[in-house]
Length: 94
Image (tube, rainbow, N blue to C red; front, top):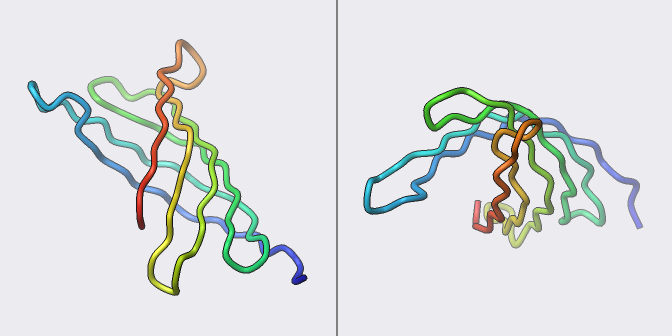
C-alpha cells in the first residue's frame, strides 16, 4: 500500500436550488485532503457561500477517481456554517 498523499486546492461551485424562481447558490472553498490507495480522496473545505449575503461555508466528503479524467464525489455542504447552517448533500461527477 502506498503512503498517503496530501493535496490542497480551490473548489468553485454554483447551482440552482429553486427551479421556479431560479435561485442561485455559489461557493468558493479552499479544499485540503489526503489521497488513500491512489484513487480515494478524503477532504475538508472552508470558504464562503452566497445567495445574497456572503456567509461562511464548510464541506467534507470523499471523491473517488474512476479514470484519469473522471471522478465521483459525495460531500456534505454547510451554508452559513457557523450560525444556523443549511446542510446539503452533494453528489456528482467531476
